[in-house]
Amino acid sequence: MPSVAATRERLDIAPEVLEGIYEISVHPPRQSAAPWLFIEVPHGATEASDYYRLAAKIQSKLPKDLIDFFFVNTDAGAPEAASWLAERMARHHWGVVTARCRIPRTFVDVNRFIDPSSEGQAQALQSRGVLRFGLTAAFPAYIDAPEDHRQLKGLHGTYHQRIGALYRQIGIRENGYMLQLHSYAPRTVGIDRIDAGIVEALQAAYEPKAYAAWPERPIVDLICANADRTLTPAAPLVKRLLANYRRRKILAEENATYTLAPSAMGTVYATAHPKRMLCVELNRGALCEPYAPFVASKANGEAVARLVEPIAETLLEDANAGEAR
Image (tube, rainbow, N blue to C red; front, side, top):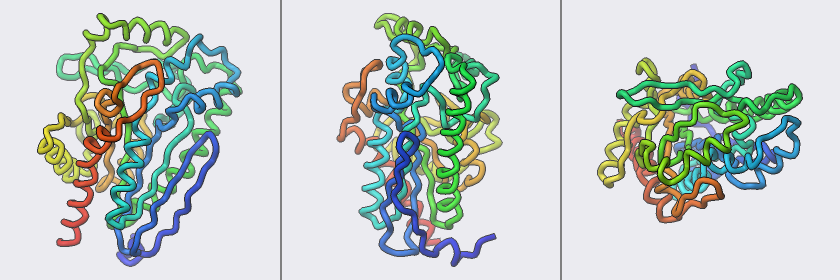
């Protein structure tokens, strides 16, 4: 068990870029005893260049117009939200590390375990009488060439070797906080299989009349428990964050769209560092103005500030309360 002194000693983490895999940025703290925040954006490959860089190396036959799926399925606005939060906490002299993944989940999802046997089939979840579609597999079904699996598994492993180390470095500190930050589409669209027909299925689902029938998602969803609530990391922090969102009249819920699923790498890190680990989904319809499904959507600066400020406020409150205890 590390000593209190060990968890407050100077922490040296340098900015780092591994092209096509991750970008790590750092705001060093003013004092060695200052709190630290690690922000992971696992679906941070949001630019067309991210897609084309890796697509050029794929041997499998890719569906036509697959970049449409890329834009629908990547976390538009999340990297900008992470940058805003990092700068906000740095102004309070916190140390902040941000890790943005640049591997498109169109080819391999770094927030999943590698399990090629699932062949892209989503897990159907039943909750509140409404069928919700859960987590897709690490590999979509159209990635079927063995050399692609080897290459993508290598990228996945390289990413987590570095990101896992950052979770450990920040998580061991008595005043270290961790946040996995996502954005999600405004509605839950009923796509239950990621295969060669994914683009056509999405285009049909996003036809205006069909799209209007899909269930709306909350502006913010805190993914803070597993399905049977035997894992509820950072429960006091979640309660404080929900209160801060509600005080600002922002619709925030707990596990309305997803839970901490066993197949998600975020669950691994939440299990290892349960006291100060948050997973937050921000609604792209509110974060990106305007949001459009099949093209690049940029975050709106005012919207980012509105949705992310309660996270900053909650972290500052919790750290101050810890100092007072």
